[in-house]
Picture 1 (cartoon, one colour):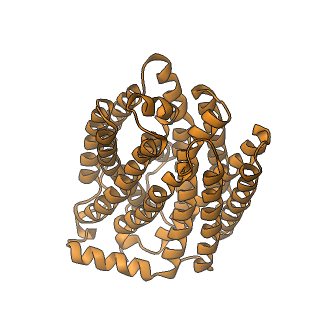
Picture 2 (spheres, one colour):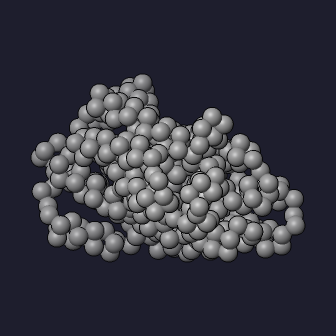
Length: 402
């Protein structure tokens, strides 16, 4: 078995690593959540309908999926540091170009590029964690990352809402470019290589495909990956649909929507930290089952609320909060359990895990607006179905991976 790189010594060193890797992992929520308050205005300026605007989300998610499929195997072959630096630098440039997009079609294309380049930060960060941690420490570190990455969906729409006070939706992409530049400098200065040359896999496309096929034949990996991916799809249905549901159906301002989004994200952080504290005392599979079951129940209640209609906002906001907060239990445990048995191909396994998540998310996001902006039923139905499917997928992994 491939030896692990030594974990950072000392609490301060671990905190710095978690902060940096959390920032790199946060490319997805930063790229998606920050411009959410400006989606209605974006559609107006570029003369695009709700479905076309939501395609900018789908393009970013598709790019995140494809980019992980490339960056993960490259990091197994060339080490973690060089592909990571290249990806973060390209993300910075792509974000700046998004700010200047003249049409909705150009923005959709650039969002794909932005997602594909930002994917390196997500997939390689997970591989670095797997390089340096195992067992209970692996679960705890992923839970620590939830604290950092959980702040991104809290802060991103709030920042986006405040940016809209002074400029247009284009300003949010300028902010993304600035964050990318800061992370590029921090990565170059503070992140060492965690995969030494003797542990790298000099494999081509055929060998990478064979590795991915072997991973998909692993019942534990596939079950955990699907459970996380389907839950991820439910989460992105909420991300794509909630700006229109809360602002156009319930009449919330961009700032009020950002506040609701932030409160929901606090739940992710809170349950993520609870998961970390319970690691070592409660089995990760048990915590995962609790999280997925809670999400499924909340999704069904949410669908019932929007199907009935004419209920006060609290009837919608409470199950919405529970659904989103459950992510704090689902994502750290699906990630840790899926990667636990594959340290020798951590980059490829992390890529496949991310691809499943973002492909499902990209397919689910447009469904939230399929009936227009006058009804929340498609959003509620999709969230309920995906969370129930996640619960069913978890039955594929009835025992923890070795």
